[in-house]
Image 1: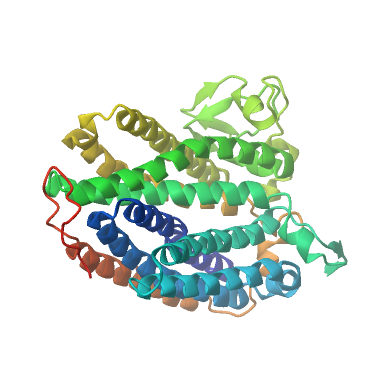
Image 2 (image 1 turned 30 degrees about the vertical axis):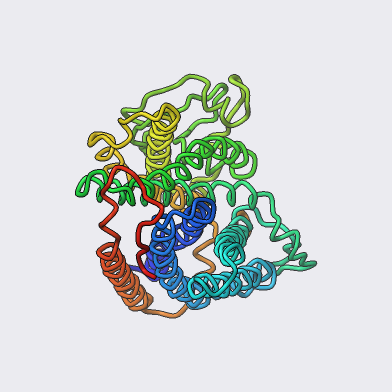
Length: 447
């Protein structure tokens, strides 16, 4: 394994783990705040129990996310010193703001965890809302920095150096909004369905348990709304990529030849040698419409770019197909849930519906991993699109396989600790809410 591959694999493993922790950290506080709001409005002890249980989950993911994010910051300097030498002064502002949001989130989380019965109820609840807002802000700032890598702005590049740096223009680059919107909605959809799937599984073991029923409704409502908004965000992202990164769009659709109109492909296996896509379903003119809003528009293919500037077509195309398929399934399930919810159908807690939730619960995070692969691998061979190649940014230090193995072990250890902590937390869930009705004078867990 050469050093460039080892460095890229290390970043892939690190980001692959951290993005899951971060997305849960973004969305989970809002589930906690939603159940806390229900408690303040109804004073039903179940919602207080649910808020406390979910708050522990928020604390666990916050701690693990902090560790994995810190490791990533070291990796940037260790693996990509040439990139940091030039990019640090340009995109330092979003990273500094991300740090500010992180500290604000930590303070608010401390107030929420230790403020029960010590702070006025609405102020206590507001601290939980601040946890969620800070988490979303933190994610947006990081994605803004990544957006800059896809759409460099805020500097003049002359003879391999950056001049006339404008950090504000760099942070608010052309890609930041669409990427941040898509990533934030993905976090809410994935987390909502994952939490709903967990409580659905527990409902299968403990039917009619009101605690899990209420938890499932809250989580699935938030996840469903995000999943239904996600295709709209995806459409904005596709049009943006078509404008700024036509090579990436061509790779994710495996469009080898510039076409007018261009077909949208469903499935298929790209072949770079024959420049064909085998076993794909063609939808005539749909790619032209999705990219440019016109069924007869021309879409630039890979033939318009030098072969050395092509992204890895097979990886990007397959990852894109997986992302779209997972998102589509979650959107369809969201429609079904909202219809059942609106009609107050008893099918909502039937075994077939619960099992369906359990089966599809990982799809949101699979879509996130696939989408992040599209974003990062689709930018290759550039680390700063059109400016600096990834191969030119890697550390000259030999033996990068060693840190790759060490960091992989670290993230596997973090994942094991996380699963163990969550398993312990699940075992403490209240098991007394088994009646068909919720009584307002029931005893409160975790007092």
